[in-house]
Structures are given as structure tokens and as C-alpha cells.
Length: 103
Length: 173
Image 1: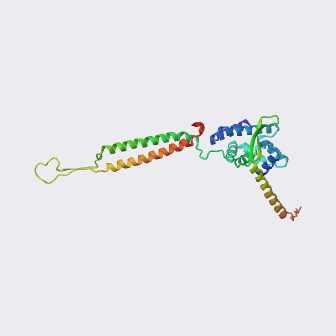
Image 2: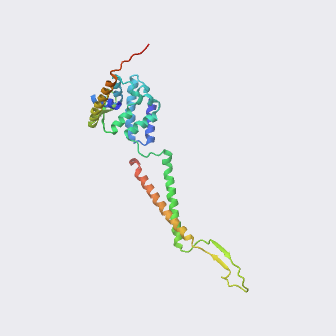
Image 3: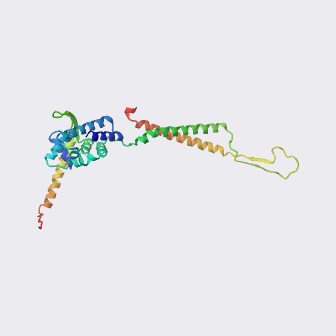
């Protein structure tokens, strides 16, 4: 699921590794560091789902930027569709549940 | 932070990751860690549990990128292998020469048994009577077996040398 999130944030705008973790944290994904994004980025790169290029960052040294390739955008679209379907199905199951906690 | 990156570099080198790729990954990691540190985020916060195990982190990253050579022997094995291969080739070649030389001489080489028979005849015996020397041709099969084994061993050694030469990285060629 994190690979889908990475594709989503770099699809909005190309980003380097640390920049992606910041964007994810801003959206509430605080657990990113626990697994580290680098192996995931490596796999996306190996599978041809991302393209990379070097460019100067804001006042810093040149960085390696990632953006989805054509295949990556297709994978992102399919992944989002599957995720929404799964989320809706789970919501349908959980919606009637009323939680009452006895004190 | 630098220590973390250096440990990653060592692991990539040990795994056989090509230098330019390892350098690119090290630079990317160092830049991100520097920026995180400048913003008050520690390596532990940024990398999580990976911050405590640089070799595993580096190996996982390289494996996911698919940049680790398939067969990666240890350094000690890589150093020993040419010596063993040279010794093996040398022994096989010597065995081949010895087998060929023995076969070329033609005569049976080994006397397996020798006995003397004292016949119950009176009078002097001719020199070639009363002594039986049992010779066999057992040496010939031994030479042929040695020759065949030496040829097989040399063929095997040639195949190993060929594989080794093909597997040598371009930079070492």
C-alpha cells in the first residue's frame, strides 16, 4: 500500500526521497520511517514504474527526483481503483457496527 | 550520519554493487539525511528501525533495486578460488603427462608376483627352469584409467576457467 502512496505523492509533483516522506507525514502517514521508503523506491525503479532524474533542489545540492513512468501511472490508477473498492467493501461491512463500551 | 552512509557503502561493496550505482545511492541517502538533520529530524525518526542496522538496510535497498549480482561469493572464497583452480589444473596436467609417458613406453611396468619352484628332478637345471616369474599386464589399465581421469579433470578445469573469465566484471578485464 505504501508503494501506491509513493506513486501518488510523486505523481502530484516529482520528489526526492526525503521530500516524499515529508509529504506523506503532512497527510498523516507517520509510520513511513519504520520501513524506510528506499527499498520501495528501489523496487518501483526496478519494475520500471518510476523514472528518475537529477535536478537542483531548493538551494541545496542536486538531488535524485522520482516521478511515475507511464506504467507507473497505470499501476497507480489500477491500485487506486482496487483500494477504493476494498475500502467501500470494508465500510459496508463495518457501517452497521455500533460500538458500546460498558463502563 | 556519515558513519551510517559509510557502513552502507561497505555493504554495497561487499555485495558486489557497481561503484557508480553505490555512489549514487550513497549520495542520495547522505543528502536526505543531511536535510532531515537540518530540520531537526534524527536518522532514527527518518529511517525507523533501519537506522540501527545499516548493512540490512543497504542490502534490502540493493536487493529491491535488483543490483546485486546473482552469485556473490565471500571475499575469502574469491581470493582462494584461483589458487585452488590453478593447483587443480596443474595436477591434472601432470597426471596427463605421466599417463601418456607410461603408455608410450609400451612394456608392462609392474611385476605383481614372483615365486620360485623347486622341481623334483635330479641334475642341473637350465637357467630358465625352476623359476617362475609371474608378470601381469595390470599396469596397462591403470595407465589408461589415469589418462582418462586426467582428460576429464582438464576438461572440468577448462570449464571452470571459462566460467570465471566470463563472470569477471568489465572493470577488471
